[in-house]
Length: 529
Image 1: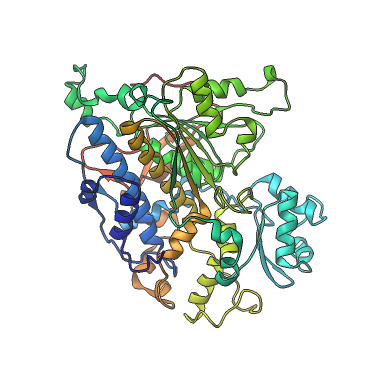
Image 2: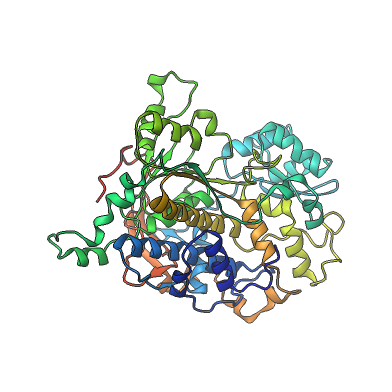
């Protein structure tokens, strides 16, 4: 679908209606500086940032009003400048006044192959070790040695060898090269997929979190005042239990967005996986953290699978960011969890939310991938370079112009937008569940978000880079106005970071919990307030 004629409001309206949400709420959006550029890129990243964050905020506002039994949806405000800053939030935080080292490893990034470029991902130690092993290099090999080993390879041959070895390397492609692939055709046009897994007879929504906490506006009063007063101080997703299993940026952003609106997000990590401080400190805001060992090679008494399943029995949302099939192999597919609830007599639905690189369909569905790799393999980096160089998209090719290497976008736009799309999909599924019952599976992929961003069109020539508004896009946290930042004590010292870009008139939004060491909390749910 060609959406190049869409403004930001058009995008929100289209997404909203496609999700089956009430049109009356669309009047409750306020978007300062809408449809201006804001960041140097040929892609409409400002449009995507403002639309995706506003979509989640408007859904939270709708849920808030429905839970109160009110016809009025409070106004949601998302300034463009703030949205673009939040799309780079992992770059804009300090601990104790200090910035953390880059999450990117020493051998990652673009490398020249015999017929083009490949991108190596090495943010995780196991990915770096796997790439070095594939290339026949020792653990202490440097970037120059990696480049020398990659140089004789054909791009796609190395990409395929990496897939077979479980290594994360992507071949650079143009749009034309990407569009002919079966995987490109397998990706849905709409970025948020919601599928009903179980019907009303399998899950009685009346016993779920929505009705459990429905008394927001009907309390008999407490020490703070009347029930109506309490409702005004209550976040939209109060009482929602979200079990999150994720790493890196996209799925953690979804959990962070839900936490900003009041969800109890319990982030489960493995004691066998390393901490990622340069990313986790930002996306862990609003979450509790527990560690469980899910290694099924251990005897049941030595792993924590039963603890996890017990937590999932009482969860409203299961949010995960691992590649399709990896958790299903451990008995954690949506269908299996719904069947377990039915078997155990649990009359409450669950929302299973999945974030993947390439989506649940197509020959690449099980491939590992990250924002930078999806940009590389899908043609985005080639097109960005073409626009940056001359504005003439016929003059540069991926393979034969050493003077114009592929150009990444100025932020991890696919990661952030996918996170907000997933949070929006979760809330849209919660709305459906409240009215018709059932359990739902929500799927968002980086490639699906890429396809959506591409459908918005690109700015002509160099105009997306040269526009005057791009000069004020902020390079470091020191450049950012204080109005967009917040300071709180965390488990690692004083954290200064970007506050959430969406505000809801009369409704609290933001994070009450700050990052702490992984495993600092018990693996249990808080009482529903």
